[in-house]
Length: 447
Ligand code: PHE
Picture 1 (cartoon, protein in one colour):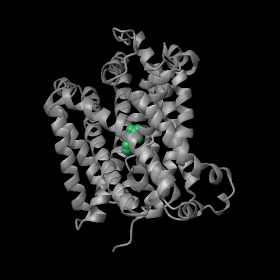
Picture 2 (cartoon, helix red, strand yellow):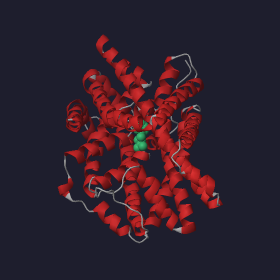
Picture 3 (cartoon, protein in one colour):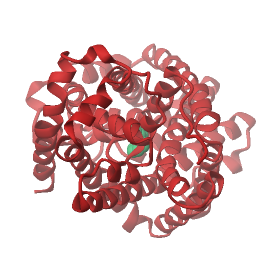
Picture 4 (cartoon, protein in one colour):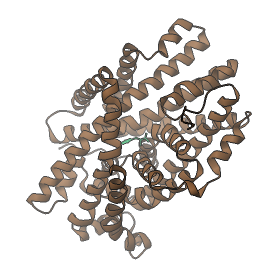
């Protein structure tokens, strides 16, 4: 067998894993969830859950992945201890791969909208108003063309492999994303109305904390850190044994939560600036507009009202959204592709194109039955499957995997960890606390 690819450096891994984590979940999901859950109180709960619940679950994935050096299904089978747990590994692996693929199938549609709005900003600058109008229309043709375009971009990066594709493009795109984000924040914060948004975002009202808010924050933390579906597991499998997993996992969690926080500094003040320009920012029920209307109606009002500067600001915003989507979508596609390339006779390139084509068909099906399927697939994958898979992975690490092997894996690249806080607390924490906490929140949300 050819030797397995590996990230070439620590930075390469952090860029790729942060690239996966930072996506529409941070720049759109987090600010809008914050807005619809009463502002700063949500931010506070989110941060606590990101570090106390999502970080330990992320560590479970990274540790299994680096130990097994394989895709999610082979990895779980590898740490199984008998016939039953082997079969369970196969089932959980399958579930993860299907969930990752379904997430990509709706993500590609939304990311396609971002590409269409990006191009629309270019057409506006060029004065091509007819094309502009078509690009922002919600037609099936527009949706399928841009979804296909986005899938082609994702496929072409994944077909190039780990260092030449994932690492290379994440390292190029992530710094660009941060520069655009910071530039946009500075611009928005000096506009009239921004301070009202800042107040909503930063001053917590503790009375707002309720079970619904906690569940939303947990779901958001899991989605944002790309957990449950085997994405972080496969990225962990490309990590060298010299690296310290707890430190790298902490870096990724910190960067992900940090960017979500910074994105809130952009989006929420921007909504209030748009209000100054006459945009309707509340729904009939009196809630801040949060869904697609926020990105595709409220913010464009803001950009348009700023005249020619607004065209450039709008362009920068949609470039930002497209980059964030792409570095996440490649990590989703890597999950089924790594399985197919490692477990079948297909080459990586063949596997990438074949799976890309299947996901394109699923996305097309969603577009054809948009009202029935779009929300359904999002709920099925992110609200239900990700937390369930998170629990199952914690069970694999805490209950099925032989404890000595687990501890040996943690020690690699970080021998002095033995006796430290992580070493003492984490194995028990993922065994008892994580599954119970996730299940409690999950059951509450379903019931
Ligand atoms: N974390 C990504 C985001 O915030 C989404 C994602 C989910 C990526 C699952 C990979 C796997 O947008």
